[in-house]
Image (cartoon, rainbow, N blue to C red; front, side):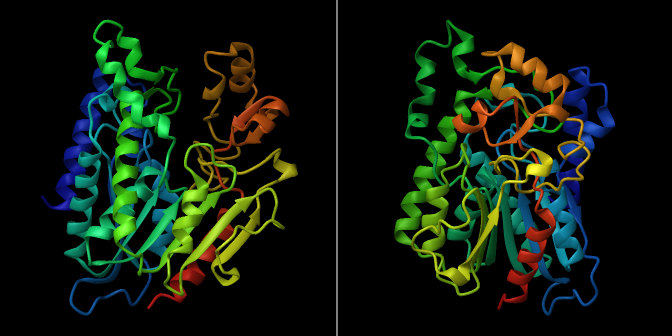
Amino acid sequence: MAFADYVALNRDMLFKARAKLGAVELKKIVEGNAPFELKPLAADTAGHNKTYRRGVLLTHGLTDSPYFMRHLAAFFQENGFRVMAVLLPGHGTQPGDLLDVSWHEWARAVAYGTDRLAEEVDEVYLAGFSAGGALSVYQSLRDDRVRGLFLFSPALEISPRAARANLHKLYSWLIPSAKWVAIRPDKSLYKYESLPKNVAAQMHALAKKLGSLLQQHEIGIPVFAAASQDDTTANTPATLEFMVHARHPASKLVLYTTDTKKLPPGIPAEKLELVDSVVPGQKILSSAHTAIVLSADDMHCGAAGEYANCAHYYPGDMEKYAACIKHPEQALQGEVTEQNLKAGILRRLMYNPNFAALKISMQRFMDNLP
């Protein structure tokens, strides 16, 4: 299937699914959740053997949607890349569609997008956020066409507890709620707040497979990675370990941290950029897993955006949940850590106050690509 047909098919699917659910802002919802493609804006983008020289496939994270890759897509487009972004199966419609999905289906979506991109570009690059980062690494280990990786809060390792997530199948036929880690209001137009246990189980299986492959293969291609030291979703030490073994001299890690004097072990200084994640003027206590790929001016998740991520209070502390939702401008922002929660009402940070600097770092990385 041509990528344009894939986009059209998914848009139609999203429209029907969301209309059935009675969505109010239907056009806006479909536009944000749908896969998309962009052609390069920069001059001199012609390839030697294909239409374009460089292309990048963007893969969003679990419970998210292609909306979260839009700012990165614009950056790549401005820098001469042909851009394609896939929608992972089970996403964009309703959280229950993740109850039975397999990580192999997500991997097939990435493989499909890689094939379509490779038909048009000489150099294939993969960029992924969270689980999309893990899927991008997985594809690169199986595909010699991939010339480089862009990883943002990559979920290369998650809690071992996730291995037991699907034990609920022994009794959830009787207690349906047992299929879920959490059932929440799902206030965002472009991401799920509810989380099925199957998602955790599938991510654990993917991470286990990825770990096995990484023991057998070195990462020889250039890797650009950005991660938060305070990430409570993905295991940042696993990302640091991955970057230690990313042996290409152009590889680079941007690490957001509350302590820029504490260097992570094993990563050469020339491969590392530490960024202070504390921004007192914006009430930001730290960066977060969710705070890498969107800029502060994002209309949905940005500094003045319409969405406030307060799901960590639901349903355990409804008083703080209500305060966080009703007065997000008064809340602190950061990762949902024990220390940050003690500081006051906390919104999980959804944007990167240093996004402009991140783009400069990515530009420098691309300037050093072979």
